[in-house]
Image (cartoon, rainbow, N blue to C red; front, top):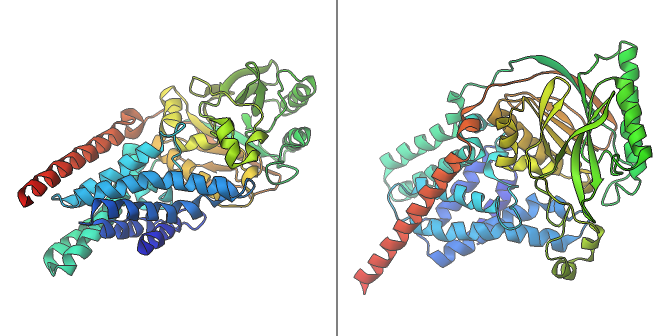
Length: 494
């Protein structure tokens, strides 16, 4: 149990802001070694200990301003599927070629976490630790699930090599060690994406917020004015020849927490900024309605015609943007009442015509969900944009972790990806996953960068979720075979 806790904590070091991507297969290999031929009950305990050791430090940013209890409950809820993985992994480790089945089981566990409960929470998937490693290129073939499978398989092969070495099977141990290395480096055979298509100039405005924490939006008009003034500064720089004229401007999530569609003063301020810069602005806004509810929107604001196309965030964050089972949640934390009005999710992918680009807009945590991003590219997006607001997470590693997800999505779909954050990190990421430009946190910043649009589709975009479902199906078949074999063995012993 102590070893599992330590290995879970070691896996955290593979993720930003630490970035030791090579530690992911080593940590997973250690977990697999603990589970080989263990009992089902012990496997579940070991899995839960590993998940707890991993998610508690990884998600510490979730409790910075709301207290320790919600953070601990979130971490334990994410560790529970890892306990199920541990129990099943202990079973399939008795089958031939068990590293394959254990790696597939890990993908199945991540598939479960990313969908349930309340729509799931994919944070901490193995793939998101690999944006700086060679395995990241596999995302262009099979998305995040294939990357996670490769990391897990490499670690499982390493565990098998150590297990065989302990049994003095030197030749098998050597073969398995080579297999672990080859799988870990398999992404190198996938050629990196090369920027192609029409070049346009994108401006990213990071207006910053008056204060850190949950009360960042207490001065909603100040946040809006920050973004308006930064855009007016951009317009002045263009007029003086100090900056290239952009084709479109991207504002972040919550850049206008005052509904600009119903509040005249907010709408007037955005109008003035759009007319000054002379190009459309993609505005992140909180919009009133329907009824007592709210929506988190990306609004295309044209300098001539004003507000136009809108994307309504499809995946509002439970306990952040809406409160499931509010009366029960209030027992654990009265801070749930800070979310006085629930946000409703939209029903359509965020493909918006913004100037010359067809923007695939995803808002904040949506970048973690495979299908939300993929749907925009399949609907014709030639540029990906992540509008986000990380002010509620202070100076924690949350912003770096989210940026790593954006890097993987750029590779997965062969698209330039632009991150626009209220308080940082904002960035421009090329289709090969490189961060071309980025800002710091809690500063007013401006990025003006030439990027290329892309119409071509990767294999991952075309096949969609099929690699994930194939691996989940493989894991379920292996688990069923292991259960049947266990029952037969018990009958023989009886």
